[in-house]
Image 1 (tube, helix red, strand yellow):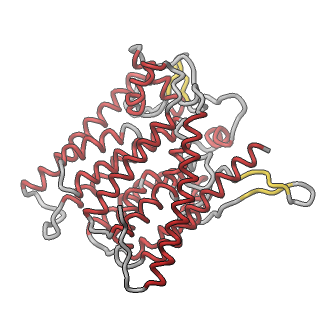
Image 2 (cartoon, helix red, strand yellow):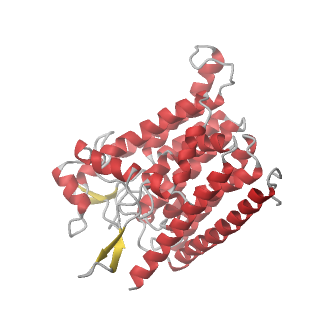
Image 3 (cartoon, helix red, strand yellow):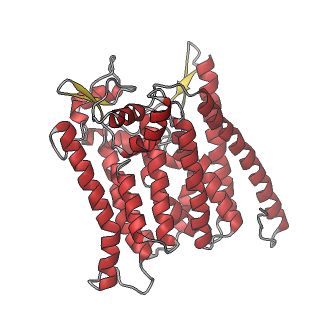
Length: 414
């Protein structure tokens, strides 16, 4: 496919092509990292394989736990997380057993499908092809989406890549005038991966409205849209509550208060013991790491010249993906304003949550829960002639991800 660049300034056009080549080469290197991780992925690391096996055997509890985030209740071990990723994994676990080791490959397929859907969404928004290509490259290789794809062998990351695909598919349905019922079903399934996905409903409703329609009305078309979007999500919420009740005896009990430490206590164990699941004690730490904290490589030794490791609490969104700041130039249309409010509703609880996504390195992975809204807003912004600066910042973000992966390999091998 030939990508057309504007011809109004041949020098700028040539530089953009050069940046695109550089970004594409770095993206290929990062893609190679995902492929390598998929090939060498060991079995017995993703607890969704255990939950899938439990479902196949007609029970909710598991025989063991592949990670530290399992609950022990009434002498039984439970994978605490929402169930839909386990349903997706069930056919593979049925074929290959509980040691199934294809979660990174599945995550990569989810991300590839999401990238294709975003290309279609951007086309419908009439974003020119060159700008759309930069947006998709930045999304896949310079946001938390890359890291969670690479780490799909872990239960948390696998759920996030699947939820991102489902949310993207729901936005695709609404933006392109598809079925609102299907969009609601997709959000309901996303909720059964990542609970905060239900807060996308107001954003999707705003996207479904014509520009001249009022936001609030009791007219039949408005009520029909609300029901089409909302009823599937309500069914998913009720199903999740029933699932919780069957496991822990309470519809609102997700199992976190029964979480068992996996041996030696980690930072998370101390936080839960001292401050609980949610607390204002976490606010400053989480806010700094979400917005301010830069890329950080620790050095040690007597002369402080020996690289020790990367900060496992991660790098802020603005430091790792600075191109997102261009979203400030988006036109303040109704879906943009409502989308921003939905993103705040999703992000705010994470600021007082016991974990900011730990462990991670060049990302804040909880951003992925509201990243689709940010990408939509960013698309409207860069479509208004901010592409050269976007290209520079996106190339930097991809490069920083590549540096991160290289350092992780070098430090682990040392």
